[in-house]
Length: 335
Image 1 (cartoon, rainbow, N blue to C red):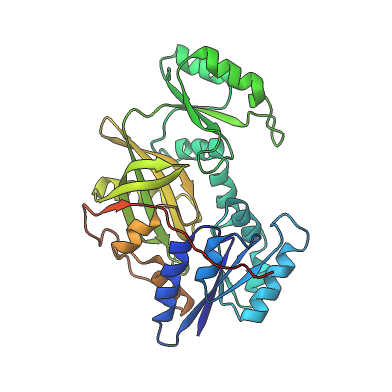
Image 2 (image 1 turned 120 degrees about the vertical axis):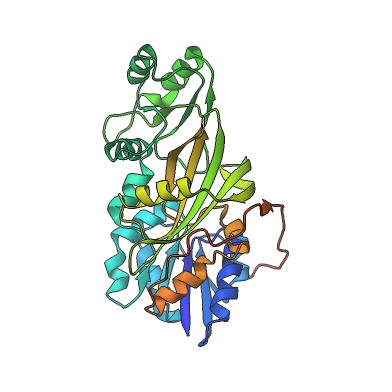
């Protein structure tokens, strides 16, 4: 029986259900164990077993997770939260020495993808299409003077997530005000905590990739056109297929040391695709892929059994629409 531990499950109820459906159907059976630092995390109550843990910044956090792994006989750990990706990537040996998979990309890749300006420079270095992006007012002024950029622009945190602090800026006065209220300091390297990106007047797409844990190659790609976003998460979308987009995703993935589920944001402007961001984790829009039979939990289960997955890119139906809605869990919490 295989057991997977999903960390910081939060509100990812559907994802926990997908894993339960998949793990429960394995020949030897399977279990899904989850953790969170709050008893108010609804996804806790979807799992076969759950544990409350301290915040990931607490000194004893990793020791607590190790104890849970021992108690539940965990075969693999799956982090969902950005800060936890980096923590697990840096400390994967603690778990791999005990024979447990850590389903996360290489530490260097996680750090690169988290820093959106470094990631932009990475795309340029490898000749991949990216929207013009600046990390300072001076750089933007030069790009504007040369005709490379102009208003409107999109300003977002270099290390943000969930679209927090991000938004469209129409003129220089507002852009200057944003910089004066926090855009002038980035402690880690002296740069700005914000990016200025050319606003994409086009269509927004998303991709769910699975990079095999054994072959380290993409074996599943699911792409969707985003219809509506809410708090940085895909709320409404429709499945699409385009060989040109699949090829761009392959080229991009080949420049990074990725593993497991990967979420990619893409824009199409004037018929050309541009990679915007990569999040080396499950994306919030993944449920559409699952319902279109692109089953990442099954691919993970195969890898845990030592099976290398075959490339099944594009094996899904086009025109399938996802429309999210709210739901709730009502229960008495244990004291």
